[in-house]
Image (tube, rainbow, N blue to C red; front, side, top):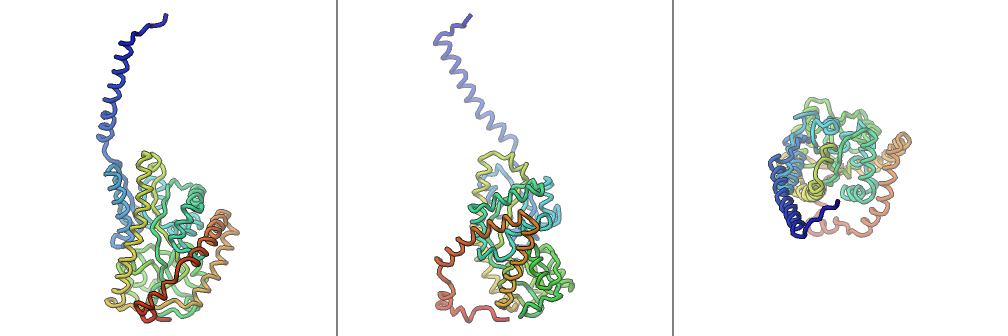
Amino acid sequence: MTENKSPRRRGLLKGAAVAAGALSAPMIASAQAASGPISMRWQSTWPAKDIFHEYALDYAKKVNDMTGGELKIEVLPAGSVVPAFGLFEAVSKGTLDGGHGVLGYHYGKQNALALWNSGPAFGMDANMVLAWHKYGGGAELLAKLYSSIGGNVQSFLYGPMATQPLGWFKKPITKSSDFKGLKFRTNGLAIDLFTAMGAAVNALPGGEIVPAMDRGLLDGAEFNNATSDRLLGFPDVSKVCMLQSYHQSAETFEIMFNKTKYDSLPAKMKAIIAGATEAASADMSWKAIDRYSKDYIDLQTKDKVRFYKTPDAILQEQLTLWEGILEKKSAENPLFKEIVASQKAFAVRAVKWDQDTNISRRMAVDHFFGGKKAAPKKA
């Protein structure tokens, strides 16, 4: 028998349902609030005193602020939980919820990872590499690469870096043969490049480089920039720095989440993280210009460091050797070959557009500031 509900009774039932829904919404919100914010423990691959760790803290603050405290990321310096080169495993396994570093530090897991931070990038600068990563297929290739080694991570690249110096030495490097037998620190695919130049390469994390130079375990080393190098104490063990090199002319930072943890986040929070990453990328690049330029002056005036431009003959040899490294690694590793092809296809149009469109700044610098006089010495 079909129940016959009166219009009045149907209205009462509808009203009750609406009222119940209205009551349940604040109850759900209240329950979520009672559970408290989502907390994440991260580690950077940088010493606490390095500006790179400051960048990591800046990123965490942006996310924390933009989520209104619903997500709270705490970032510890290198070595707090795992060694700097152990970040990938720790995040992938969930020992850490996330971290801040560079892809080259995972080079030992899959050498193709270093293609995002080593070498001349076919003439692209770091911001152009980020453009390739986001719009040219790089992000999809990185996800494929991590999947191939069982990486349970969600990666975000950000923070374009300036061209890194050739390094710090006991005396100016004037020719490629000066690297023969030189005990030298670098990382990523730059290991292959400097090894091909004749150096005896030792890959060390940032905090260990200066002590190794001080003890004579290294004859020379590169790290990154005027501010980091000054904070880490390079001018205490060397007074000669060679500027410009193709070994890491287009590097970026990596933000890494444990993927299981990341996938469990609400969609709104994931959107905030993506936005915060791009905001932090711009802010980091602006801060770098301000801080690096100040420390570049202080290194010369206060620390009495002598800067020299790396001779063009050495730079040209780096390019020649790099071609051989790409050919060899591509023959050994199909994913390496696929990434190289993707980068090159993007660069061939992006670099031409850049070179044809953007005016050289050297003429303006020379005109207003006498740039030729202020340029680093030739070795």
